[in-house]
Image (tube, rainbow over all chains, first blue to last red; front, top):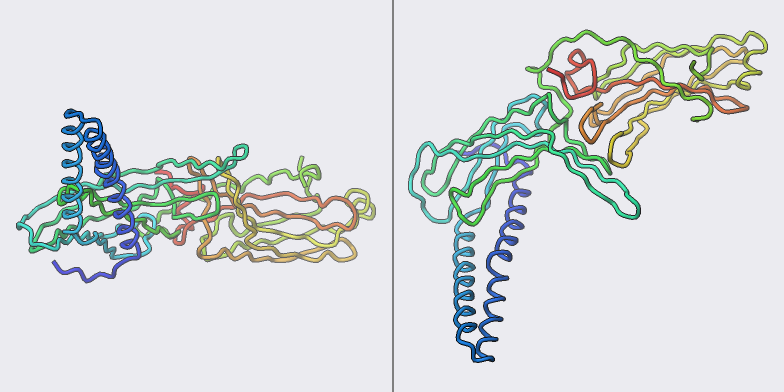
Length: 232
Length: 143
């Protein structure tokens, strides 16, 4: 399947988040255990303890093995790419997203592959509490999606139609202390066990898609608020 | 009872405006009846109207003045004018969320030479482009 749509700016965001995620997993699952194993191994040699020696060696071998597997698996894939047929996206619009996950080696052909994902809208605020600056986030929309596609040659290419809801969340907002953002998260762990997801921030513009336009009666004029001299 | 200038009246073409369009407001001031103006609010010089955006909710308030305009008051205390307030295409829309609310307010203030300026504020709503007839309250749309 040829991908001829333009590459939206979010693809680079996805690549960066992948690297961060991969680095975090590598440290958590392998580098720390390798350090502990080495410590036990050296301690076992110094103390002449066979138990420490064997357990240290075992942990170290497992951790180093995991690191090698992880690095090899991670290097076998190109970063995920996401293509949007509209950018930015209007409220209520349906945007067709193409997900490309390419391997550096050939893959077995598979048809009708489906991978899960989620479209999320989050409100994020910062505020001062005493001398601290705090951040609160609340997910105001979360909708599951299914990306369907196929594996041909060396890549998985899938598509999904995303509809930005008009009754939850709002357009992207980026003020100093108040933000609204939309995220697309696609779980691609089916192809790589070392955690390659395609994540993207979607820019939603303050435009209502014409398919969602409707007619409502205008409400009565608002009451003016009192701003007396005391409140001036 | 409102503490705004009782001689000032206003009308809006609509209390709703799309981003990239404008609010249109007509303001006028009835002439002084001799003593009322001087005694109650000092000598009035102009009617100043301001459109502001501000957030409400849990986060620290973000605010921005979108536009301001004024109508001079003559020596008889009378004024009349039509004002336009363009809303930028990339301005935040009015929003009613869980942690965040975005509000727009039109403040009508009588600039006086002496004393504190009397003013009152009128809430207005900025809606998405193409949404002029689709909203009766801030976004999100209610089903």
